[in-house]
Image 1 (cartoon, helix red, strand yellow):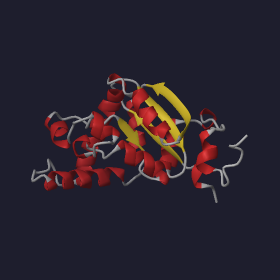
Image 2 (spheres, helix red, strand yellow):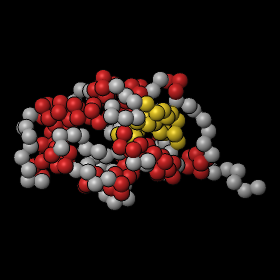
Image 3 (cartoon, rainbow, N blue to C red):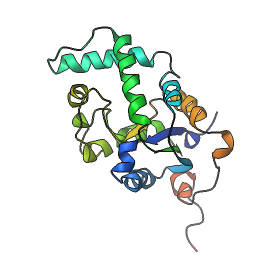
Image 4 (cartoon, rainbow, N blue to C red):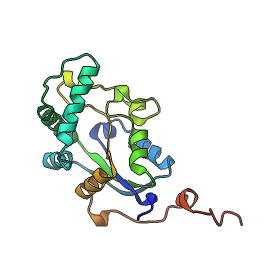
Length: 201
């Protein structure tokens, strides 16, 4: 069984993250947690690449549609449709337009419990309801309501994998095996070494 420190996740800083010049801030937040960056590239994804990304999980479209309906209802608003698949298609169309509008920074991060830690620090999908102290809570004030009013995707700076299985599939979609670099990070000795040997001279 692999050690938890070998867990990996995909993070994509979306076009608004680059335009807001928050790349360094976002990377810094993850680095300060002791996570290791093992892959990174700047690219403009194609619409087909984004469509495939959001359909790697065959249930994603339905789930996002259901969440969208629930979010509307919690706010006392009427959803544009009660069909989760129809809403899911609408979300994917908006995401294709959003994610191909400019360059993105795709990254793979590694470390113990990295999927959950990055999701926690990144904040909830909707910036308006994300906690202060999270990246989205600190830097964005967009909302589902505003995005729907403007018929666009929520601008929330970052995509971060939601589970270990999702991360493994997404990493394969965005990176070739040879683009991921294994190396020793000095901080790992403090984080993971059983005895923390060799600190004293």
